[in-house]
Image (cartoon, rainbow, N blue to C red):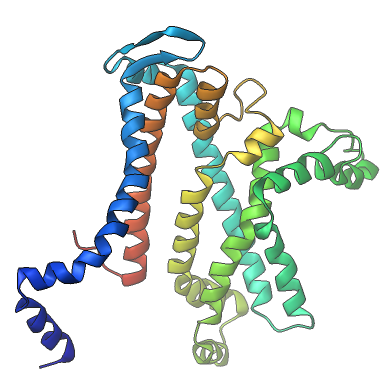
Length: 307
């Protein structure tokens, strides 16, 4: 009998009292976790079923599902949802391409590789608010921004990037910050690839492109999936860059769901509708996260996760 089988057999013979005596010390932590994570969500559901505008003290009252109906009949909600998809998919795809290229560069030995790797990781360590201010003022400003200073000599200077191309500006800041995240995961995959197989391929006459296309890229598939899915879970909640760079504008051109929720609460002061929108966003995020985590475990283990 193996050790695992002996442990399972021993656990099966424990009485209910012995099992609870072992679980008992963990109960306070479990209860505390449930309270701090579920109580706010239950309160949000409660407020979503009521009418409550902070500018109208007499507006409190039970309204049922009318706040949810208002959310799904509001055209701005669908625009914000579409912008959320554009921001998430655009940022993750471009960051994955840049991250793959930088990982391939750092996988080769060269003088100063450690310094270069540290400098490339730095954008991911900067606070999101500082990153947004850096891109808005130092990079994309039409008067003294670095981008216009570089493009000016070839006749492309003087462009108000944030005002004329707000979505592209937000995506540029996000890609700059998330590319190191993708690079680190893909680089970990590259450095775990067996070198003897690559050497055997080269001895058989395979070119660098054939080695990358038919051996390295299939080997990196699960690492690229992991980076893309983890990045999607984080980028879908982007707020700082949009708040600091465009305030969701012009109009609602760059308003995503987190910023739209902020507007409903702190500019519209409509707590009931904001709570209903928050519940909808949480449910959508849980659905996306469930499929993402299932895909991650499938990619890692090579089989479906058991129910």
